[in-house]
Length: 306
Image (cartoon, rainbow, N blue to C red; front, top):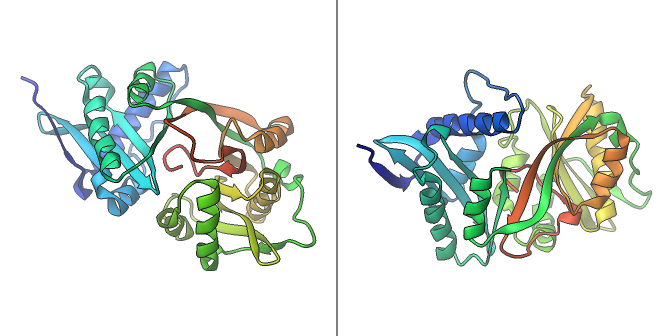
């Protein structure tokens, strides 16, 4: 007899959800003809823990006979509900576990008065149909791209009138204002996470910004595993000197290759890097129920936390 139940996620579930996520991603990659990188033990669930601690009511697990087999984690920023994660063990597909945890995460957004729903979706037709039924349609394509750091060093440098900031700790109020303009809401909890290196397994992380006459033009984050993001700029072309700053940070630490995640609307970044021997490593789908973020001037931190 199969008994399906749902409950709010707790800290003790983090190890189980990390295993569910690893298995689900490996199954998806194999279905797409890619060979998954199956490490024996999943990395620490840093993003799982962050969402659970900052907005616990948005995290749900689905159990079969008392064992965690799937989960969903959503957060609300401003009036935007964002589904950060939804994974179900491949062995239990067909039991509607994904729909069950999604419905509960959606209810959390409704209770918080969210106006827009959004997710970075995989290529799975089942997952995309699930999100479409919740009112989210594909509005862009997400590309994970990688390439040589040297290509970043060839991007335009900051102008003589612009000043570099090498630590964003003291700029959080101005960053919050920029996030309201570009992303649609403040992301203070996420900045606190990134500033302390809590969102990555890298040994060293950095933050940087560009200003002119006291006005914040944009900011970014980078880690010594080569990952860049998020990066946000007041104008699309301002992303390029910010990415160059990230490249200089990486080059100074001997890192030769970099990675980032970009939505298809960002012609500035894609148009600068793809001709410079950067390549597309993975494709996903940006699905929303309405507009909220200016993706032509924003490089997300990744598909897990926009």
